[in-house]
Length: 145
Image (cartoon, rainbow, N blue to C red):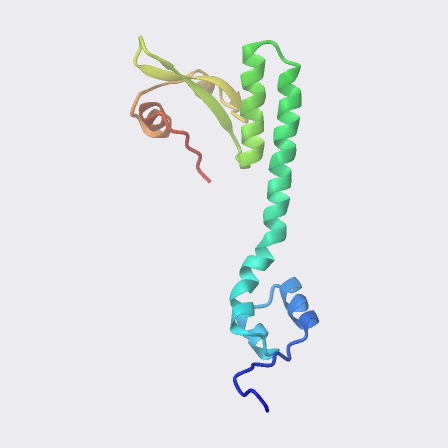
């Protein structure tokens, strides 16, 4: 007796792998007879290697940072390494650490990486003013793409 509800898949796995490697769109998967769930899973599967590379790079950066920090004794040197690594891991052009001056009611740049202007390095900003002031006011980290 033949069960008419059983679905037979005729798509060759090599075809699906080739389409994934070529970053094909959904229409290409349909042309080889791929099941709908395979078409839906394709973007997530394609993204996995890149996600693993990013995670590996982040872990390597953390490992390097731990090694660097273990050999440092000066607080400013430690903060400089942290800011540099943060800049590298996030992939930004600049990174800096602001400190709050409770007496003056403002913030100032303490450590920088990638900053080229002296005015930025020595500037002060009122709490609540600009992005830096927002971070000081909310005590929450922030980065912009």
